[in-house]
Length: 265
Image (tube, rainbow, N blue to C red; front, side):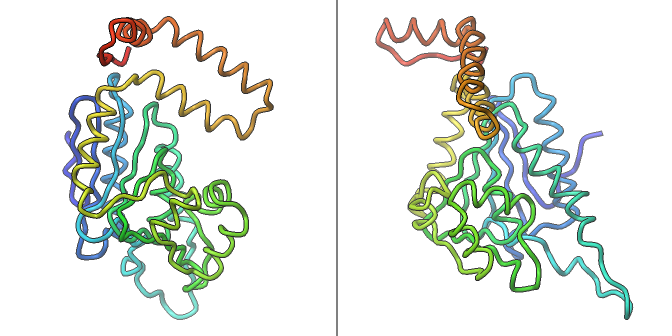
């Protein structure tokens, strides 16, 4: 039975999935329904043999304000909530599945990305953000610590001091600063949001998919490998890619001085 999406929009064309978080009246904050929608969309993508990429963005004036705290109904006096349940049930799998997709995931942040919303955005392989965007680690304001992979992702991308400051003080990091820090790949003008999404869609749909997948895996593996182990990994992947149709097409196109027509095979 096909899933009916309620809090996201999802489409798939030319091998590229596009997920839009779609609760603009709440800055696309996460609900259980949204998590269920995301699980269904990722399950669909994981089952596609011809998957070539995923674009993630938000509707309206923000990307995602994090967890919708209104879903956490007040408890009876004396009772306390187990916040680990939401991480284990939803955020853990969401972040790990984004990282594990065998194709590039590109997040295009269209406004504020706060709390878990920032963590999920930065879990994608490449992040772009419009100039008006802000990344906020807001957890300290309600007596919590960053989660959804935030304490893993931020220090590896921007270093301990910047990650610690952003988490402890909760100060917004502008898109321009995020680009300067290396937190995101590119800051783009707000008016270029739509054109950027379409450009990324075209690039993924026509790219060398197997090379993208190998690059993704190798870069993430490098943090746990010695130099020798990483070179060995590159050797093995490069051998495999050398037998691919895309490599043959790439070399032919180079010799013929024309753009390559990659099939993803």
